[in-house]
Image 1 (cartoon, rainbow, N blue to C red):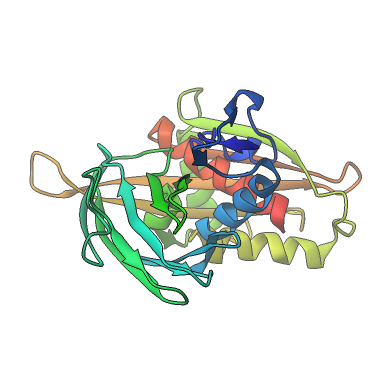
Image 2: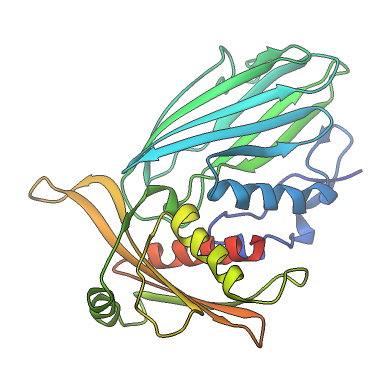
Length: 304
């Protein structure tokens, strides 16, 4: 049976390749069950949706459903992860290992045994019940990836399952919207010119989507405001085919004066209705912020 042991999803960095998978990631194994290739596209779509949604299903197969609910205020977030046993038998030695990240201060608590890393550790999830994990996080620096979480368990027959996932904790979760007048927006936009500060990419609208019209642009505007948590800066452009937004990326890190370090972020999405495409441009003072915002925007537009 071909299964995926490692998912080539460095989340933000690879989000614009979420419809593909590294063929080398498939291995043959009789003693370890991973994530089947056919599940990967749905997984990546679920991850992308959760990057801009407060709750939803991250992963599901016949045995297990992993749900996520997350909320953020400034630089801090509260992430609840639910592991539901969908089968009629218990899941044994169930463990969830969340990697520590340089850019996140993280407190972890969960169902007794869930966070054990010992070989014989873990908890038992009885049939039709669930285990819970709570993460309290504070971001300390810009980033463009997402924390890895590895789930392992055994079924009653002793077959080990191992699922490498990513949690949808991405840079745009820590944005606070800013509303700028057209003159102020354009002044800041020009001041952030330069290769290190700008990221730009063109994305085609999905083949099944309707023609790009003003209703479509309203959906794009909602992606910027509700999904990416940017303030809509109206009046910056003479056409209805451009959406501009501004936000502040909040961190819990302090500068030499004891003030929190924050990063101003600008985004513009320009539509080309004839070509059925969008150009996404982000400008910030930090290259990782520019890249992170662009990647979330691209994936969100693909799902619009």
